Length: 387
Image (cartoon, rainbow, N blue to C red; front, top):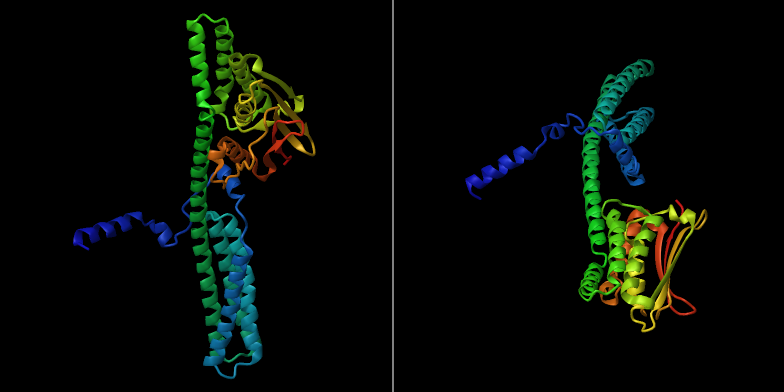
């Protein structure tokens, strides 16, 4: 490595180091109330971390007993027991303080905890001197015990500062990661929404252009339906959730456009209960299911078909949204799970994206199923259980 490269690396390292953290001068990040509310969702100190602390406390106590017995032979067992119990008493207090700093690693809380720790330290030393006088301990033993006590408390104080600085940095990094993930999810949502059947618009505009050129009477209704569709789908790009009523309006406009193109081959009806109309969905979920029903259920049939959109809301079962068609039914072996590598080739990519958006919004409470109807056709069913 050349001298210039080494110098640049050293200077780069020097510029990257935050000496407030390196010298453990205290937590450097301050969080707003909104950020603290988000940080409250982080898990508390795990049992594994608590167990590690207890292992260190017990190990420290055993080491102190060994050291006293090794360098001061003949130490009475009462003295060794006192060392062990004192070590564990301080360990319990330190663990409680560490839990407080784990939840809120702020400079103010660290200073308050350190001040309390210093008071306990002073009280422990004064108590030790009083106990030494009453127990008439050997001076050499007393000095060794006091040294062990002070060493243990110094290590405990150091642990408080190290944990507070590290946890503060971790919380700040976690918030940054959450913000980046939220931005990525929002971008993915917008991209998924923008990808909703773009060829539908091209085909509709091509049909409209042709009908205008030949002065077909169907041009005006198609233009009106297409305008209504575009107006109804504008909220898809701006909001994370839409009501079922808004989603069903976009689906109805889409079906009107397709009905203008397909004529009597396409029939549809909507059955949306008033309670279900107010429920929330990620944008484009219903529209994707309706587009699938038209493309795979109605268009392949020479005689056309009928599509039914049904939505109900129950206090126990939650929201149930169904898109039914009387076509040939779903493809055999269709897999649209998130880990499916064949979703695109099987025609399930849109369904997989829909399931992913549902899971992002509602977690495991949301489900999407595709099943065959006894009388023929397909049912796409979205369920969202109550929180």
